[in-house]
Image 1 (cartoon, rainbow, N blue to C red):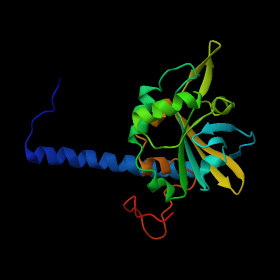
Image 2: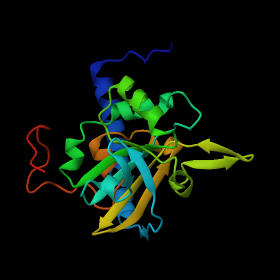
Image 3: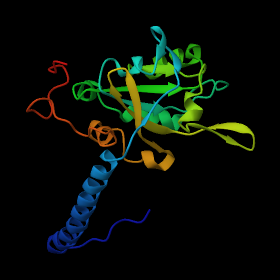
Image 4: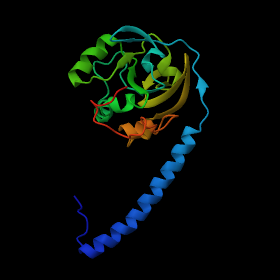
Length: 214
């Protein structure tokens, strides 16, 4: 293992100042990119997708839980697999308490092609409370490119898709896949993918997760 060079405190501070300038430029560029993302057009979702979850059958509109936005984690779990993808599991482990998203009018759910009878025990094994649905009875995964064909066989892709609701109309606003998920998972990073962004709750920013009134 190659260790960093050993220098004096003064040399470290100078090098850190130079790096800080570069980090600030990246941060500003990320803010500009985020604003462009929020200005993307959206497309209405016409198909009546049917999912299966803990309360039985559900529509895409149901996954919103009455909120304005929905972030779907395309969790790689094919129908024939015994367990879900370890990389997707590691990503879901990083997702914080959903109260922070829900207080900002945003729902979150995982969706996989595996039947719910396989999802449920794996979810229990991992100790997750996040809503998780099976899309095995619909073309949801294919329509949103989480399942693609390779040499005639279906291949799973990890990803996130964002949706916006206007009354009973659902719109697709954004999706990201594969390496694009690097660095995501926190509440702020997930909100940055959505059309409404980091909308504050009233005049506050963050609270303890048991203090929200949403």
